[in-house]
Image (tube, helix red, strand yellow):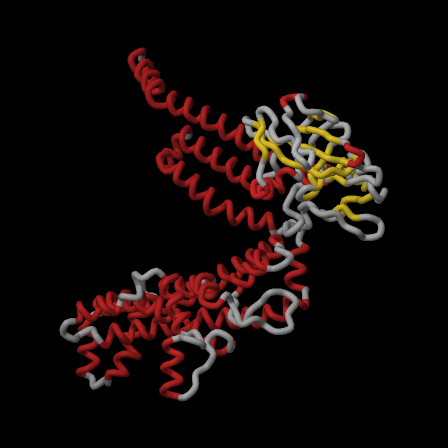
Length: 520
């Protein structure tokens, strides 16, 4: 009995104890990181990291989860890089995050409290910049009534003369030729630093001096004061009081302060998406084109790939032919799309010039809505047919030849054999790939945006939308290319799009059951 207990103790010490120590250290670090994230308001990421920590700890310590032990880190990373973007997008869709509403409320308050204004009795100066050997910037100020000052951040020397604090002789403009430990900055250097200098309070902290522009500085005062008890901000220059309302400090007259801050707004973005007339107008057109584009991209690419696979299946030298036919596949899509865009350029495109030489005219492939849509489908067919050619060639090799031979004996024509035998058997093999291709093309942002950025634009729409935009490119424009940069609304549309595509894909996979063996 003692020997068995000693063996169990030894196994515990060798196998379990090191894991326990590792888990404790891992959880301690994760706990610290999660607390920091919660403090910063990054709740979605904190939730994901908490789930990862619990899962990894359970996999390492619970015997029943032993099978996941060595995969736990990989699964945790998959949760981080797959689930977190989904959860964060869902969280973002319930906020008003966008241009002017990026910061937290505390960050917005701190930003406003840093703003300064020049009071009516403020002193104004011209300035010359000097840089100390340690990189600090000092200003030589020249005000009215021979008011001279040499100021750094937090210090001020008033009315200095040559010899004070290492100050040398003055030039004809009243600026020291030399200052010990400092180098005078040239105008080109000052221009580079101008934005940073405008954020620094020079001189006496009780009466700070701010750089207002190139060669201009003035004494300033804080413009805004925050009252934490009342939750208001007061403009000390005008006396106006602003109250926080839905992510913006707003006055009684409706004036708003910038920047605002992001707040939770529930389902407002989703309601806006479904109820906005401005969105409904182009949205129906975009959604219709999205379906047409995805369906025809799959059908044309599959049809061309299958046709080539059947056409060259029995020809001599087919290996060389196959190699040449899949040339578009290894070429980066970005390169191919840009080449096609230049080939179809209405001014100097080679294909356009060829069309004009043969037909006397050519459509404008980049500005005519219907021509651009057709061009996009053609380009996508060029990019995708090698993929379908490869899988169709492999699937054709796997089809049982005895069935086709029996059909030939029964007098079936080539078309009858293809329609009744080859195509149904082929679809049983490739139907999941067709569904996956549809889902991919439904969100094929690269082709749409690289070819023509979704243009030409839809006329008379208050939001950025193009005739060849699909939902994902429309969402991108809404979030990043519009003046509003409405990330919350774009996230809400992305969630709707995600659910929509998931449902369509599920239905398509269910429909592929008609090609399955019912007796299996």
